[in-house]
Image (cartoon, rainbow, N blue to C red):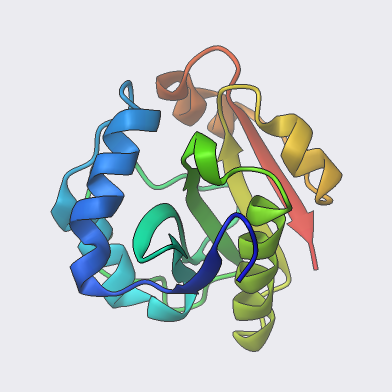
Length: 166
């Protein structure tokens, strides 16, 4: 285990810690515990917890989806698309004390592996809070069109839809 901790598959018992982290790091984008639980149940191979010294200090959620479509925040998916063409990286959140040493890149690599195992050829995400610098380093590029502009409006002025082709 590194100084930042080790990534493992998310467990249902991790959801309370996920909610605490989300409330701390994303106060402007609240999501109910049931939303996180649904994502984890629908695609457990794409949901991870960062554990350090027995405590969850970060998480990552992803699931198969459709390119150029952004699932609404705090809304149930109700299921996964029958023919997804990308992995949607819903969120990666890491507490300040656990950042560094490649923690975000490590979970993104796990998600990339999950996408490849599913035969998906792209990963898409919405970058907020200026995190696009990190995502660009990991191979993501901004993607724009009229449909995306409307959906991004709820994410703040700096939100970017980004895609990485696999």
